[in-house]
Length: 110
Length: 116
Image 1 (spheres, rainbow over the protein chains, first blue to last red):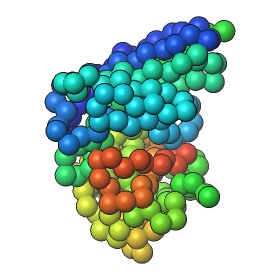
Image 2 (cartoon, rainbow over the protein chains, first blue to last red):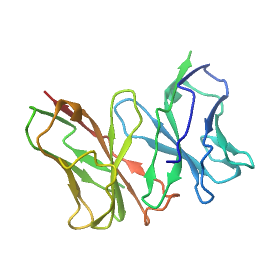
Image 3 (cartoon, rainbow over the protein chains, first blue to last red):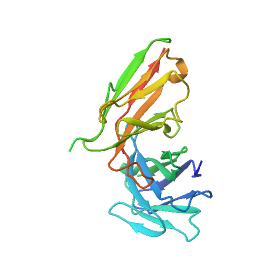
Image 4 (cartoon, rainbow over the protein chains, first blue to last red):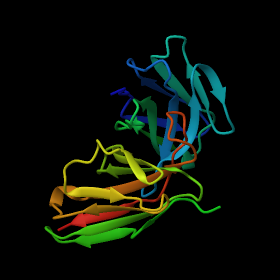
């Protein structure tokens, strides 16, 4: 299994930039890295996906170093509504399984 | 357009009973996934369909769990002889293409199953 390791929890004040790092030492050559966000009582929601270097969309940036053994999700100027659990995933074998892990619980403080 | 829908939203049953959980994927999505999520944990993969066939059912915990997708759209997760340990939120997701590793999975709101 291409497992991932993330911090269990993080706190941040409103308006700050938040960086969540994920380790995935066993990532396979063809695997992409995907981040999901989950609010209580809802299913996970896609945030961003990348293969290497940097990807940016309207809500986040994803930084991936050359060795691809880690990745960092960057949320600019967080607000209270960004309080959620964030999961880092890598693709998993021919069965298309995804290993979610326990995620990072982000709490944004006013 | 409509997202992934799941019914019922909540299901309470007694130990030993049979339950069915339904998932309506996004129209046109060929891949469908079932996950189980326990409190404080991330979703745990159960089974993946490509069209009508189960391409990977290695995540099903035992033979009490079974899932079907007879027409390649709606899927039903079936649990026989439910046990208290089956209590969890059951999530369904669908994706557009052939279920490759880069596919974005769109999740439903889940069905909260409680076995008394």
